[in-house]
Image 1 (cartoon, rainbow, N blue to C red):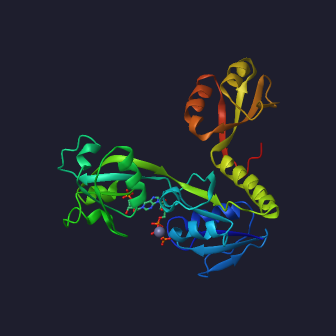
Image 2: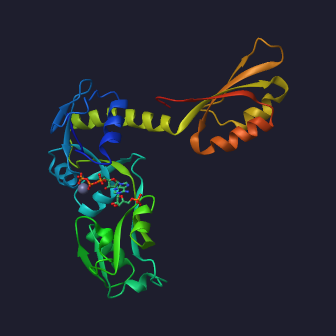
Image 3: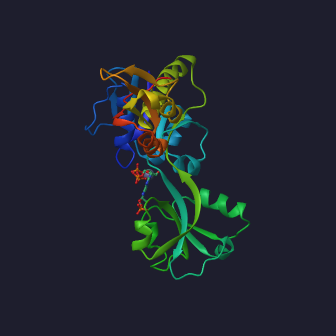
Length: 283
Ligand code: PRT
Ligand code: ZN
């Protein structure tokens, strides 16, 4: 039985459970319990505060955990990041009042920085040879400069809206972060086998999410140009249409190349282009 720690409530909870359910675990969501048993996989979900997950995974109370990389780096526990999950993307940044004439990290010398991430900030300062006073606070970091508690802050930024509405500007991105899957370092062979099974599914789900299935019609005399534009898993599938001289082409596109390729397909005479989400993708 695998024990998987997931955030009890907050930004990561829903996406963590959705991912596990897309992997077929069958977890009943919506209950405010501390534990839940997966219906279709030998796994138990432990609902915890994200800050506590690294300790539970280090101690082996949980075998796996899903949390922000920012928390993993801050807690410095003995555990291993085994997969980046692609959601809850953000950065941990230093910000200063918008009127400050900030030119380089040297500006921080001798200053007071408020943050909930003192270890990450200290590593950043050490790397740049800057001495500054770190003031550890646990919430509402962005108000610290306004109330005279600090000269700068280091906090999570996603859209930047919070900084803006508090009269601050982002001056250094210290780390980038996203949700990650972490594992205990001393897993039994049985647990490792279950994790391998789960990892296979996670990869299939995440790969599917970044790809699209595409169908289009093309005149046979343009097939070659169109096939050259399409990547495909191996090569595109080509089937004759009932209409003489035309074929239907099926392929898979990476989301990031999507629009570029669609424009090229149109330019090469493709018609009736259909784009369909992929649920699972196994290579
Ligand atoms: O209760 P618990 O301790 O479990 O939760 P929490 O309050 O510590 O964490 P939570 O749920 O707020 O966030 C969990 C994780 O989501 C974080 O550790 C990050 O890895 C990730 N994440 C992604 C974010 C954001 N985006 C984010 N925007 N975490 C927090 N924020 C906050 C940030 O602190 C700031 O106040 O949103 C504000 C900034 O957002 P913008 O869009 O205005 O820039
Ligand atoms: Zn937290």
